[in-house]
Length: 198
Image (cartoon, rainbow, N blue to C red; front, side, top):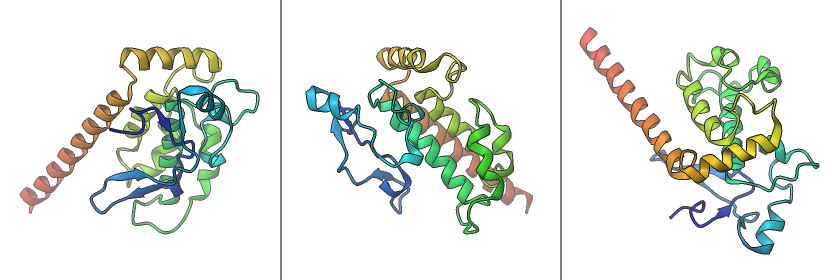
């Protein structure tokens, strides 16, 4: 059973709180800010603006926002973490050269569905747009109205999607698993192609 299923929110999804094991399995650590979603303490705690600032969901950056922390906000944090990792490793996972100079302007130019800003990184991170799109779909960043109709319309859409199951935790896991299977198949095909051409 996952923390999401028992309605616990981490509140600080950031690179320093993610560990990846040798088998590629990821896990969130450091649950000192975690809260229950339900009950009076949970409701109040979800209104607190805590966690690593650079990776907070955009509506949680505004002090005026009346939206409590939601599960999709943590998914939005994952989008920012993926972009952070890619911008710090522009030539792939083994690259230690640091953040590319042009990455500073990326977040300013980021629009839902925009692949243009990712082009310099696609040689080494070829499936980046797809994983960002999967996560963006589950957190509101993928909505055409995300930046025009505002917070209330986005919350309404996400709540309806989670209620219908279309944007549920289980659906996100299924979408990511399908993505993983596709990547593995693609890599296997590339290996076979290289063996055949030799």
